[in-house]
Length: 316
Image 1 (spheres, rainbow, N blue to C red):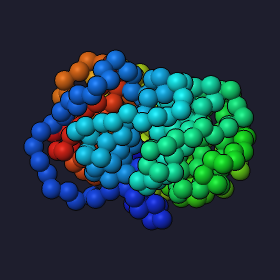
Image 2: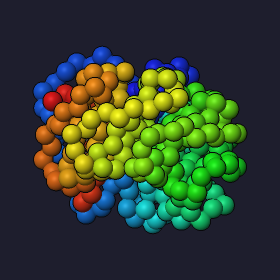
Image 3: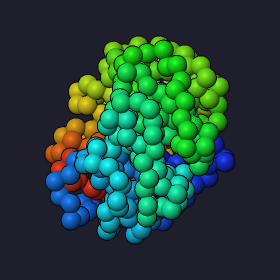
Image 4: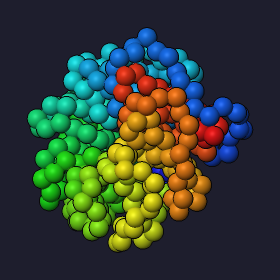
């Protein structure tokens, strides 16, 4: 998740989906960031601008940076359950979801986090908001929940599937996609009141989905799977990744430049919308679980064993 929704959804200019598309380049590739927590497996990363970001992971850990990821401080998340996804719409409003139906929310940038009741016991894997009030949460057993009040209350939506929902992405208040196990792709045009299956042509588990606008999108998954669509998911086609590794996370800054994070320290980059993907060097062989860019140059990737890397050069 990165710059794309700011371009596709004008009302969400900043937040986890927004940033400056024309930064000044600086040299460097991917640089490792050292923290006082070295053994934690990090699951997800989210930034609202080039300076302020959050990481969520094992043991309920939430980290915050105010200097672009050079240093990180631990926040009191109020849970010890693993947190699988974190999302902020701006510098104050954020949510994180995790195992055993865990949902925590902050209204002050993470200074305080409060537990919200979800009414489900399923592990929750993904959270996405279009503004401080309207959001969706997905998880195991086909769970999709919707809120219109920032997660004060949640209502279950009928996904029509029983497998795990791994990722949800919306381009506006109405249109969204969800991906999950065994090639599942779902689409809604009415806020999730109805979710319909889109044939993916793949049996691979799909781990994340991202869209540049209402038509152009990508999904990544196990066995090196990359799928793309140019018609809102009416049809999906395979893109060649050149690997059989699990691909866990994808983000794009515009329609052409994208990055993927995967197992064994794999980082892939495209400059042509995914027609070709090339690997980028990174000093780790640990599995990477979350990648995030706010613009063409500034990005972060997190993974197992405390891995946090940042780039100010698009990973080059």
